[in-house]
Amino acid sequence: EVQLVESGETLVQPGGSLRLSCAASGFIFSSYEMNWVRQAPGKGLEWLSYISGSGDTIYYADSVKGRITISRDNAKNSLYLQLNSLTTEDTGVYYCARDWVTDTTNWFDPWGQGILVTVSS
Amino acid sequence: EIVLAQSPATLSLSPGERATLSCRASQSVSKYLAWYQQKPGQAPRLLIYDASKRATGIPARFSGSGSGTDFTLTISSLEPEDFAVYYCQHRYNWPTFGQGTKVEVK
Image 1 (cartoon, chains in turn red, cyan):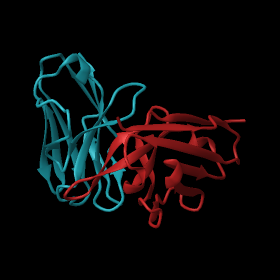
Image 2 (cartoon, chains in turn yellow, orange; image 1 turned 90 degrees about the vertical axis):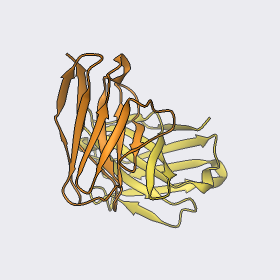
Image 3 (cartoon, rainbow over the protein chains, first blue to last red; image 1 turned 30 degrees about the horizontal axis):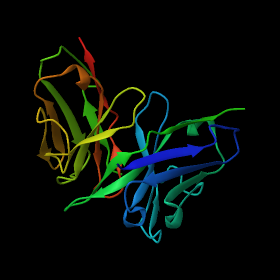
C-alpha cells in the first residue's frame, strides 16, 4: 500500500522556520516526482513546490519563492520542506503529494494525511 | 498564472439528486484538468484526470467533461458519502486549484 506520512513541528513562532518531513512507503520512492501543497484553515489548496525523482529539477510557487527549500533523500525514502521567515499567513495544513504520471501530464495521487502547522507566538 | 473559477461556491442537494459542478479557466488548459474530492479532516483524493478519465476505484457516477476553458464534474446520483468539497486543478504549467465547491445536504 502506498503511504505518505508527514511529520515535523506543529507550532512555530513568527519569524522562525518550519521543517517538515514526508516518509514514503509502498513504492519505489526514487522513481517518483513529489510535491508540497498547503491549505490555510477553511481555505483552498495552494501548490508550493515540486521536486523530480533525482532531485535535480525543482520548482517553487512565486508566493513562497525565496523562503522555501524542497529536498529529498532517496536512501531514506523521505521528502523534506523548509520554509523560513514565517508569518501567521503560513498557518495551515501541509500535504506531501506524489506525482502520478499519465500519458499526458502529472496529477497529485496520492496525498499524505497532512500536518497542521500553526505560526503563533 | 492561470486562474480557475469554480461555481457555484455551494450546492445544496438531496441524496439521489444530480450534481453539476463547473470550473472555468482564465485561458485554455487543453484537457489538462483534474478534479479532487476533500472530506472534512481528510486529504484530497483524485477523482478525475485529463478532464474526463476516472481515477482508479472511482465510482461510475462521477464523470468529467470539457476542454479548453470550460469543464464540468457531474455526480449522477448523490450518495451520502459524496457530500464534500470538490476542487478542480490544472497542470498546464505550474499547478493551481480552483477555490472549491461545497456539496452539502439540502
